[in-house]
Length: 251
Image (tube, rainbow, N blue to C red):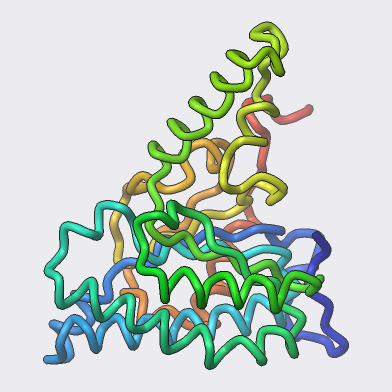
């Protein structure tokens, strides 16, 4: 996967080498934003979808390699049926609308999560968009839909166990790379930066394996209010940190 290219100066003071290659975002606060604006939760999710579109565009401008958005968790099925239906309708609306522009902007689209829990029409639109953008080499946009990190890791463990049972894999040869290769995110670099909106300080069963060494940035902004300026502030925060991966800073 290559980083998104841009032909003009993006006028951002953080050098490209200091920017995160992969940003993961927990898009939280649509419902509270809606309540604060006297709107329905469905309208809050629509505003959140518009915010996502802005951030995808900004990541392309800044040359970010990958962006993973927590769009719908397995736990979200517990929400009222009307709200779940509105979220799925947004997918059915936005995927066909955005498909051509994703190709035009050289954005590769991918969904991670359990597809067997989704309606056939949603899966069809996901697959059509993935197929249309498969050859794109710019920003790698990943949506986590019907996703649970614990489920992902459990699923990976079962696949590895089945390979051992069939004699295709030796137990002693199982490494961290083996586990990573059996996750939904196989082939995608681990996130450098995890952003959570709405001021909550938890990771909510999101990319638990992959964010082991990610830097975390929490903002009090609700997701619909998260804009390119807020993204750039998060990147500034990231760029000012010293990443040591468990080591000590050299003298």
